[in-house]
Amino acid sequence: MKKILIPIASVIAATFMVACGIVPGNTTANDSDSLNLDSIALGNMEFRTEQKYFTDTLTQNEVTASYTVMIDVPVSGNPQLVDSIKQWLLVRLGNPECEQTFDDEMLKQCASDYFQECDEDGLFDGLGAYFETSVTVEADTLGFVTYEVDGYDYTGGAHGMPFNYGVTFSKEDGSRMGWDIFADTTQLVPFLKEVVESYFDEVADGFTEDCLFDGVYDDFPLPYCEPWLTAEGVKFIYSAYEIAPYAAGMPSGVVPYKKIEKYLSNKAKKLLQKK
Image 1: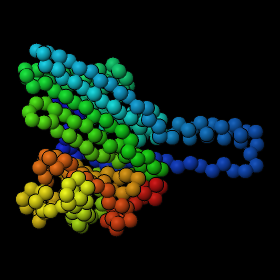
Image 2 (image 1 turned 30 degrees about the vertical axis):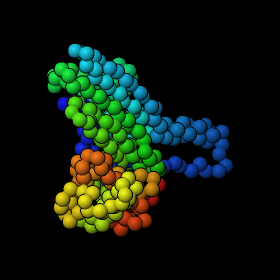
Image 3 (image 1 turned 90 degrees about the vertical axis):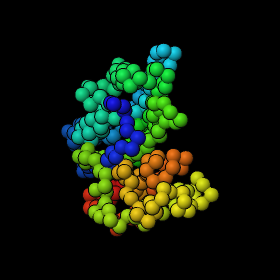
Image 4 (image 1 turned 30 degrees about the horizontal axis):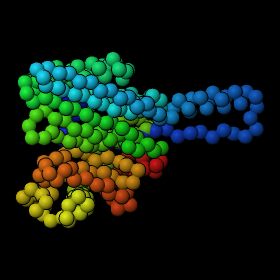
């Protein structure tokens, strides 16, 4: 299925951008003109987004499928960064070959594709479907831009599937980061345990190993979703059913940079120096 997002998608992290120049003193009239042109150029390099919202429904056989998206689409910035984000957004929308317009016509086509898939999967024969997602900027620093994806996908049964993950882009070249945020991932288990324990301390009566599936705590896995950079630290998340029952939600948390910087890769440290 070409659905906009995949609940347990392991989708990348890390985005960065460019720095400003310095104008010398004693500028002449020509220098002033040059300064104005430079300001325009720098203004065009500033990362900016425009929020797009689209919702549509289709009813067949008295069963309704609904589709709703909210997206922060980049409208200016480093061209490499803007193009990288737009290409990634198109994949999230299930239409990687579409033109990068992100207008109502394009988003309506995405909804039509979703309804067609629902029809082919027999979801209009009694189950119905519901898809909603937001793809928004979670962090925008001098070094990187991070998007966070949040949503819910229902295609019948007792409940649907929530999904949440983040992706970080370099503002310098538009490249994305995932596990390469770290130079070494073999030492992360203590941090992951701390994240999960803190999560259950907040959402439950406290953490015990019984909160997780049998054997998970003793052989603690890396999350299926790759980590991403936030303003405060590195965020980790486990998808529904990954390490705990559905009712437990999606265990997640942010590890502050000061606690985990020892294990960061040189590329991640470089991005954070511009933060």
